[in-house]
Amino acid sequence: AQSVTQPDIHITVSEGASLELRCNYSYGATPYLFWYVQSPGQGLQLLLKYFSGDTLVQGIKGFEAEFKRSQSSFNLRKPSVHWSDAAEYFCAVGGDDKIIFGKGTRLHILP
Amino acid sequence: DAGVIQSPRHEVTEMGQEVTLRCKPISGHDYLFWYRQTMMRGLELLIYFNNNVPIDDSGMPEDRFSAKMPNASFSTLKIQPSEPRDSAVYFCASSLGSTFTDTQYFGPGTRLTVL
Image (cartoon, rainbow over all chains, first blue to last red; front, side, top):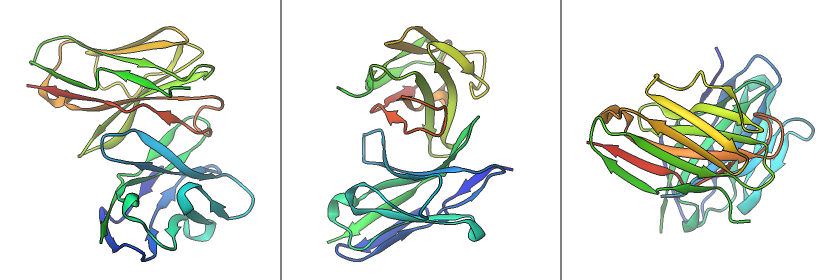
């Protein structure tokens, strides 16, 4: 079955610390992979996406993600988080006929 | 561009009432999507349109839900009659190109509460 798993519902990190949000997927065909961010009261905004090429993808706001086919993972990273990064993050996998979103990881930032 | 516009931002209604949610996609985008977000089920695709034509409504939960797109700049999602379990945040999104491989641009959502 096709699915996206974000194993961490909540993550808390201190401002300035590094961040890694995990995402694992199951998809039969070659997937398009996305990370979206949702700030409180807002819609989702694309951070980055991957389809092919370099497996390390750079996105907006200093985020990057690495595609690891062998692990079916697409983890999101940031070397140093800012208080404004507090939000909910969604991993998604898309193809020709559907898109599946993970349940999201809520990021809390400690001052 | 103003982005995807949704109205109302908040809607509180009583069980059994008709609810209509509205969406204006980004000009020039060919695809329009309606999603529902709940704590329990996360973000679910309800229906999507390509060039104003409904392509897949398999995510619409029941016949009480209907969606239309009379022109390229307007879409509605209607619930009639509404039930408390319909309480959720409903998002509209649009994209320029390929169905689920292109970037989707989301509106701010409509928070629906059915009492």
